[in-house]
Image (tube, rainbow, N blue to C red; front, side, top):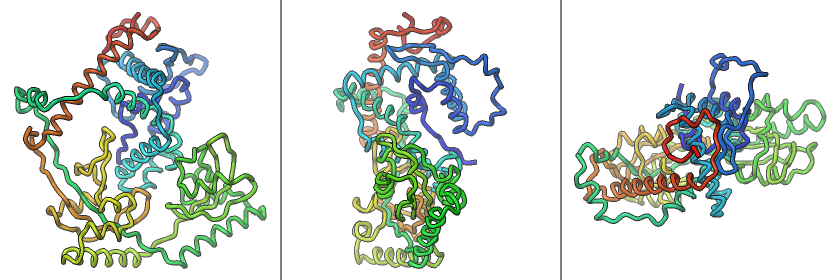
Length: 474
């Protein structure tokens, strides 16, 4: 079983909001794929949720703590100390940042939230061998449902990150400080820099035959006709035929904001007004859909849809492979450069405007062209292993982040082998280490100071804990 790290610990902490209650604990059980037989059965009459902490005007519920403990156990997270003490303190710290973000009018846009969610989902897809279907099967929800469920969590995460960056924005370190910091450090304390590579990519999506597109459209028209005649229901057809993970729910996606939907899908869905009518056929980046309105609530919509994906013949994949093979040979012969080919030939929307250079979103959520090998898509990493810097790979087949089968060639632009960081070669990396340390010290001081001026109340049983920060117990 492949493992998907659903959220880093910080994200799990941010996900808990004051109104979670026992419902979230149940949802986390399901998401974590924990067998219910492993959870002790309790008498429902004896289960009483309660407010165990109050930070400012924000409560922390007992169920918040239990939900986080369960999620962490499913993720293999261990606590440095007593979880009954560590967990509520960590939740309380997150609330301090969110409270300050509200005071300072820190805001995040829907596009920032969407980008953050998309980056996380793309990372999960890579871990699931590049398969959207495997990810949906593992999480037991569709990509759209994942986006919907992650929205508020990632909004809080973005707010906290922005708040932290706002607090430390004026902190700087000089070259002299960096040199002083590392001057007397033992060699084994100097960080190792892992092997990193820069990769350019060109992809071609095999063309789907017109006859196959017409077959799919005809089938969708037949579905519409059958529903309109009352022969069956839209939900029944979705369960039987839809190739989206929402088929299990009769095609229902749940209440979803426009920003997290495919633009062409959203444009049609949000214009529907009659639940008894079915949309025209919609082509999105995922395939072809028909849509039925269920309900609208403010800026969110709930619809059913049926997705059908045109089949790609093996000969079409081989044809795309032959074309890229010829292209690679032309580049090797100097007829044009890889940069030019990527810009004018590649189907990859994410890289073609940057000469095919792949971009990596790091754990710190910054974007860089440098990848550790384990951060590359599996098929790309396999190809990189065979290349010297400047070489171009043979064509290979892969599934891109949008779930499409494509053929690709890559060029290894650079490779820096793993090594102990040095001031002369890795100054920026060492500078970032010192800067991160200074920022962490500042944030810790800020939290300690903020606690002193914030109303905090906790149940008696939490007052004997050994906390990271002093001042919680008033």
